[in-house]
Image (cartoon, rainbow, N blue to C red):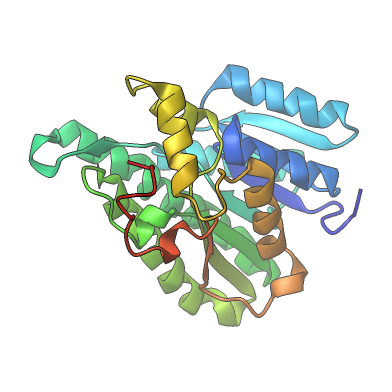
Length: 265
């Protein structure tokens, strides 16, 4: 175990599974005190237990990132249990994919309440504490959808574009105050959310193989690969990084189009 984050107080939203879970675990492995800010009580408790059983320190706090009062209460409890937060990972998010004119008003509001408002709620709740210390790090999780458009995925990419814009705007305002704010855009990552997406297809295994084939690297990313990038961005190793959006996608967004003879379609 390296101790890059020894006794650092880290909040990870949406830490009950996938990228959030692995990020929380990796922070624990490197000595941090981890807050699992998760809506699902069962998964949150399981991750808390796993981290603590690995000789690290973690607490689960039930949190609905779409509700500012819930986020504010989570931060208040964090301060009570561990102290003032040093690092925030705004990971919680949901997939809402639709055709624009077929999308319902509730789908629009649901997507933005979690994927964009949820990020702002987290930032707004921790920034006063970081300002008091004149030091802090925030990493917001966007997506390759945040700068590339895939048809029929509306309004998810709209919200994720917003996350990148929010990151850049806040980064400029708070860089001189000792707070670095950056963003990561993962590509296809092997998570329960992606698995559920494949399971909506007539042949899930075929859909997975086709998606893997489209990647220049010919595989999905792992949650550990994404988490390790998040830890680097949170560390003192990259304090000169301000308002950046780091793309970790196996090279998929470097491709302009698919060749018809690749066998991927």
